[in-house]
Length: 113
Image (tube, rainbow, N blue to C red; front, top):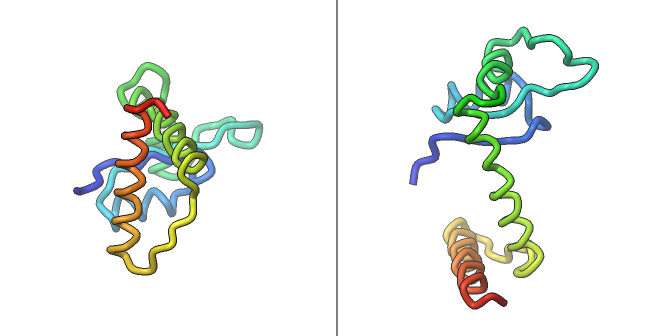
């Protein structure tokens, strides 16, 4: 499965991260420009300025970014109920471990455990 869009919180806001995602990995990045007393004006870097404009309330990108809470909730549930340790050593084993956790998580929701 190909990843088309990457959502990240403001802690990952940097022009270097946007360049890596967009130019090297060919993935669209949605990372909000940091806010606060130091960042009270529009960013000067091109991708960060684009994020400040595209993630304004009411625009489609803002609606997409605001769905990130669902992912955070599922990650928290999986870590709490099924632990966060991955014991596999190979890439194939890690992939199988994640798939097994996803299936187990879904079955637990269906069974309401």
